[in-house]
Image 1 (cartoon, helix red, strand yellow):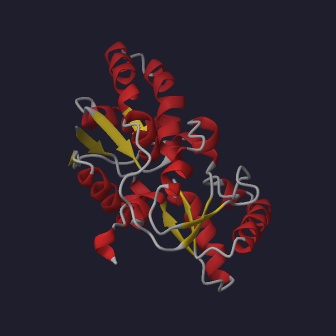
Image 2: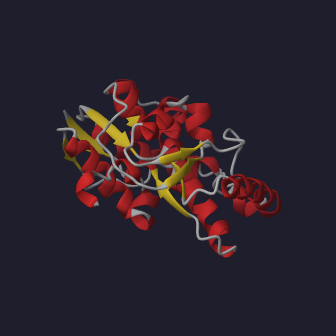
Length: 245
């Protein structure tokens, strides 16, 4: 299959290894990966903070870059949730019937990374090797908007060498929530404290998730407390293989 990668703006800027890992996994599975060079932000930051008019051109940009794709893979639950929840009504608000049709045709081909593996390809074992003790945090958008369910956990259980430890309060928010962490820093910090306590109780070497936004927030807290626990995107775990020993 020919897969188009939408890397997301914050992965491109802050976490480039995640995109590289997605490519390694998909190519190992026999797929061809394309990267449309004109891609940019999905518009979530603008739309969720009241700059909805400014988000409209980003919708047009996304559709223009990806409308011919066989499948679009996105290593971010929050970006996919933005597209599914808001792109159709944004296209309606723009009063562009052609754009509405293009959005309607494109969205069924857009997948979060783990969702693409488990629901589109029907896979659990992707040939990964990661010999570490790991716990998994379920991000809010993946859990509630995309309904990923236990898909990411099934992928992790099939990883060779991993010691997977279930996280207490798996469904509890880490407190990031984009600008929520800035506008409501006290509440966000308290939520983060609870999440970190749960992570540390697992004695895991690493915490993984499908969203680097959550992991960035969690890593900040873990680093400030000098815990030695790292965060790693699910794609980077699945990209590991026996050759990396």
